[in-house]
Image (cartoon, rainbow, N blue to C red; front, side):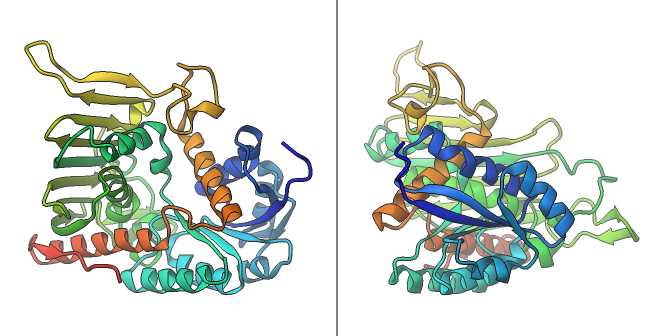
Length: 381
């Protein structure tokens, strides 16, 4: 890598789980990929100065700010990376875009369709000035899912008929697990639906290349109060969401998201059945893709180990057969973002894609509120 290569100053807001993994991605991307822009970890934003300074030292950030507005205003910040709860996404993203800063925003894009619409509109205006925005659906960057997308795009599956996808976790199964911001609607927007369902909606639309046009949904909250510092606090989001859907081609789909599936730690699964072949993916075996296109009594799914240099993203890493992990998907994400900014093109998925997912989540909630009534997904303008 040339030392004369241009740098891009990164200001990141938030330093918990997502902040840690995003920091790792920014720190490592230019050591493996060859982006036209080299990220410089300029400033980390956090409300508590002591905690923010500790995180900055641990993750490699040069400075800290306790006010995200001050972070955006800094001359050494070219891109704002938003790793905060959903209730602040819209305000931070719109302010950053209006200030001429590129934006990477964690998913789901917002807590409501109205917020997502405002963010997408701000991104469209910013695009006219060469400012770019991307939403962080990192599972698109799993090599096996990117390979699945390529198989569908080249027609290997034929006509898409069925899609089924689930995202199963169990970290809330204990009724005495403490209250967290993820269980409050004013902070998270929704529960498993937005936290997990957003991922499988985006993954299904990405792999198939189609859009969800209508849904019939159910949601439930199993534990309505959780221990908190004040005793017990009300849970105001869903614990699980299930919905049927129709895709733009007429194909049918089913989705399930829950944080109450005992024994399932991070089982994000997607299966697509076509007229010629099928594929299946499970994130708990994230380096594998199952593929079926056979006939006869011995035909069955075959295992593709997605670790060859020809597979998406894999060639910059290790020799064939050496596995990648969760953190690599974020490195792939920022590599694509840096390349898009340098080329002056729109990164994918953009805020319009995030809005499209938000419209699906909203339709599921409206359907569930009306006893699973079939609900059309509003078309993005």
